[in-house]
Length: 436
Image (cartoon, rainbow, N blue to C red):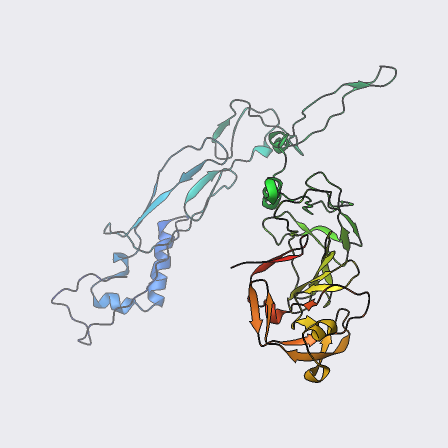
């Protein structure tokens, strides 16, 4: 509330200007009469201790209280249920100045005719349920006349659903006396989407469109429904079978795919059909995998196995704990040929003899082999090891005795040699292909 200017010949009783009060709110109730609003404002001004201050400035309560509230438009018409009409209110004091900061409380005397929200918007809301079915014109409690037009009607029916029936196929009993038409009703959305196949996932669309050497020879999207008994092939091949109890279509973590199964200890088996290997042959197995941190698989669990022809007959992808995954390759006899989880390079005793390593030249060590067993090994430092164009110097390598059928390999490259190098393995040609 801002005071008007003080007259030059007017002083306060104390000889000083009283402090200016800020934040004096104005309460206005535009419900019944302006008088109620005035009384409320006067009472609150007195409660705030503003009487002495106003008198000291030669002012009275009537100078700044609400004197007039003008609502526009004064008269208007709403033609249908839900029609809206915004109302505007101008609040002024007796001098015609706007009362800034006023709050208006809107109210309707009969909500069956119209409602008004806190912003002053009037919504038509007559009560048609009180009218007799078939009525085409009626007057509400405020003598407003409502007239139906077009196909509108007042009915006492209670509809449970509005549906469409695409066909009415006639049928009859053997006597022909009872003729009827079984129907199937559906909503409008079914008609609009009929004949439109569901959109496949981004990953599905990408893989089935690949051509040439990049095209997969087998592809199981694993996006089958929760009641599926197998996992269908996207290329028309044999379905992937599973044993155990996977939870199909239960995980939506990957945006590129529709919901995928949770393995839950189950085992899946898929058969790759015969195919002609491209000139730059390489076996590629791709899949989406999510390992929950709260319940990871046990260390050493086989995540996937790939069976092929050639020197490396089987390749296992193994969970090694702490979010680490290792790759192990075996020949047809089960001998380990490749182990990305092997920390040290290993050679056989025969290879050590050919290199001129004498028993007294070796130290002692231990190694954990496939299955978790720990065995004693010899340890020797070599000048260098070279595989193709790559070489390492000064490595301590392990000499591990071999038990089982003989095999024509000198040893195993470990991560002490492979770490930091970029390469891929061509299993069919038994080659390591190094990248720059």
